[in-house]
Image 1 (cartoon, rainbow, N blue to C red):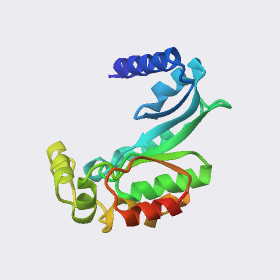
Image 2: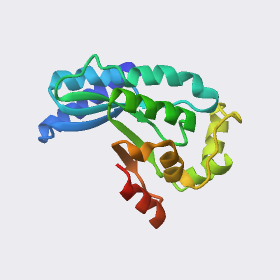
Image 3: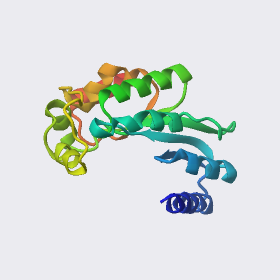
Image 4: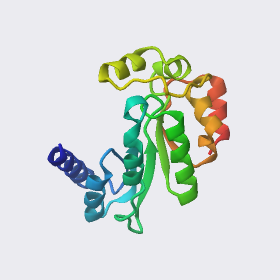
Length: 185
C-alpha cells in the first residue's frame, strides 16, 4: 500500500507539473509520504493531513492528528494543514480537537461537508447509509455524537465558520445554510 500511495502521489505531481499546475491543495491520509514528494518537486500550496476516527476506530485519531500537523517538510511555499475528514468519518469531538489545533497553531484547515444527503440523517439519528457502512466495517458503537440541524449547523456550532477554512463539496444545503456559510470565514 505504501509503494502504491507513493507512486500515485508522484504520478499526480508529475501530471501537475506537466500541465503547468504549480500550486496544490493536497489532501492525504498519508502526509508523511506525500509531503516529501511535494517539497522535492517544488510545488506551492498546502498539504492537508486527513484526520479520521469515529466509533470503534476512534483510537486512530491521535496518530492522524500528529501526522497532519507534522511541519517537518514545510518550506516558505509549502505548508502543512489539518483536514478533519467528514462528519461521517470523524465525530464532533474529533472535529472540536482539530479546530482547536488549527486555531492554536494557525495552520490551514479543510473538511468535506454536506457531501451527501445522508450526512444529516446520520448526524441526527445515527441511522441510514453511513450507519450501515460503519456496522459493515465492524466499527460501530453508540458513543458517536449526535447533532440536529445538519452538518453545516453542527460544525458552525463548533466554531468551524470562525476559522478560514476550505469546505469541499457542500452539495446538500438549503438557503439558510448558504446564508450561514456566507457569514463565515
